Image (cartoon, rainbow, N blue to C red):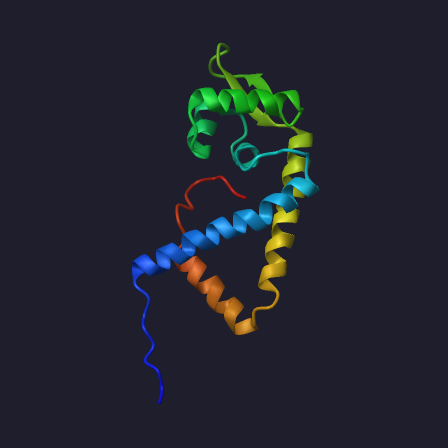
Length: 153
């Protein structure tokens, strides 16, 4: 006798997707920290990625993109500046305002983190069949969230 397949509800799928996202973070985080500058948080990496895509961004734009408060982003930016990963430059429009720019070291750290993240995910995807990989790519493409943002990881 064949068992009838039950189609998962959107709620069931949402739970699986969120669990999957957290699992990816757990797999990727240690590999990224091993490959890049020590002790870079995911918020710091997201900030570097945002600055790569948005050169000379004001602190408030970086805070919005990363999803943190302005005081938290200010502290995060100070740490990145102290490590030489980001520079602060006067705004061309308003000399009283400072903008953030990704430094050469910051770009290198971001590239290393991306390589490590991709390698960690690739090891998990490797066992999938060609058909499963195609299905996964198609499903993820259909689920694209806000791709209007210039931030890339």
